[in-house]
Image (tube, rainbow over all chains, first blue to last red; front, side, top):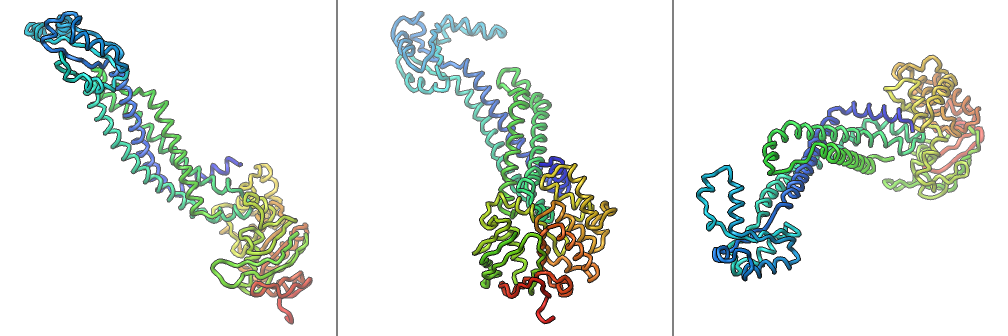
Length: 301
Length: 229
């Protein structure tokens, strides 16, 4: 295989259909950028989940009666609840927080707002069982099992807040992926069209090539490479704009959210080392397959 | 060299066979005219030799290989042993004379140093030395056909197929082209030429195979175009 020959054929081909090539590169770039965006959001969701899930507890607040009379959780119903929770397969640890401990922690949390601490009395705060689960996403099992049992005032699953955040991110991701798919379909058609035009404008060359006994590789590789080169340029543009977006927009706008620890964003390294290669490889595979199928369907060998 | 055995070719779109039970042999180094009116099956015959088509029935042997049964991946190698020349030259208009000839070697993967060596040789053989940097549109019809012949011959094929190579040329130029084909034939290359040109066939006095309605109606060792002409 003469690389210089194939290379010059590819360059000529791309320059000959320059408007078509640009259209295809842009469509591919936007489609891949959206795909990459989807990947980054997925990663954001995973990172955020990971970060929160470690800290998530289910709080079982006990009734006033229990809070007041059973300081160290040695009597039923508190002791019974604790025992049953500790025996459950779903539960990792159970920590009892008495009314006084709750008050101490309240004081600690709000030490910057002394007037709030002034107002609060220990009697207003319930004792609670702080339950950490093996799988923090299965909090509903605990809620269902214990809701309404004697001694329990309320069950609060912190995971619910996380779920709301994640639902929001997920629907954003889905929109991106649907958009990406629609554009991908457009990109596929453009690749097919580009290969057909290319094959048509080069039919004399291809005819001569076949006649003098060039193998399929020689006759078809220039077309495939042409599609792939355009696809790869699209992928590079897409990866570049994602990196730019991350550097200048996302990190700026979402910096506060991240510093406040509300969401965890993927690092730039993740974009460069994981997302960009995924985009490049998808572009190559997709354009090569589309090009090959088009050649098989429309161009006689 | 070539052995055609009971070959019939029926195209899907036609009821009448383009070739009907045709048999003949061509020896190595022969010069054969294939003549006959339009639609007599000349082009089909050439296409079958190139494996552009496969016969509906019968066998086509080239160097003892049945071309019709050849797997597709071996077809390029077959075509590398066959040179082709056409009425319309089929040169690449954006390439120079040298590049047009070199193209035939580039696309079958010949190394650059071989190309630099053999292309000038073959251009000299066809009488185009000194014109290697010209573009096809700067050449006369006869010169363009010489480029096409150089391209067909540059890989030293065993066989040269010429489909009406003088069809677009005036009689004098046609004679020059025939002399060139004869010279190529003298190097041991088998030449098969399909033509309508009476005067050429009559003046060359070579073997003539005449086709009509897809059948061989005449096969003369030293023929003329029409019987009684």
